[in-house]
Image (tube, rainbow, N blue to C red; front, top):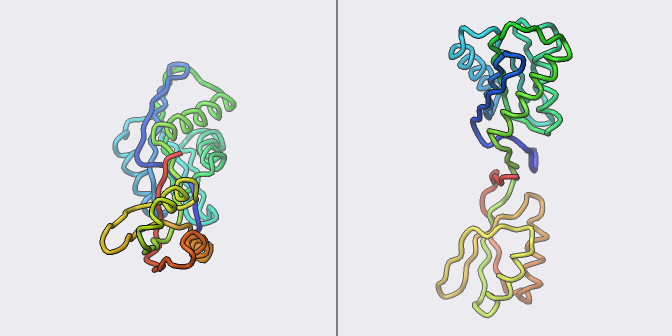
Length: 211
């Protein structure tokens, strides 16, 4: 059974901050599986081959089943783990973050590194943007024109998303309904149309909304 909904990043994002002359470049992207996450980390390492460190973390899969963090030479627990903690705190999954550091000559200490990598990760995620992916089913409702105005008004305040309306001998609306709420939707539509609406369920898939 797929998750009904989860948060992830919209796409690639990048942001640079400077702390005590060290450059921290956060690079963030979505990854559908661990292979994609590893490939992203390797691309960034290749891009910044001359950097002091390329520290990374990712969270993949339902229930955050895969969680990995890599300090890439920084003192243990001061880089990869803080990045991972930002991902978990924000509730993100299927997301990979690499924070590249170009050392500026001033040591930050363990606490300073933890704060720096955590802040860089958060900034990179902000640059990428966050979306909610909700599992929805496409449902087609067919009904007489007499019910059109009422249904349009009620849809505006309902947890359903109107995708398309077709006008022919009768009105047909393609509506996205949260998975598991198909029966509730059918009852809701029946109540609006005195049981005269015809309901046909279609395919299910994830729909993304920015938050």
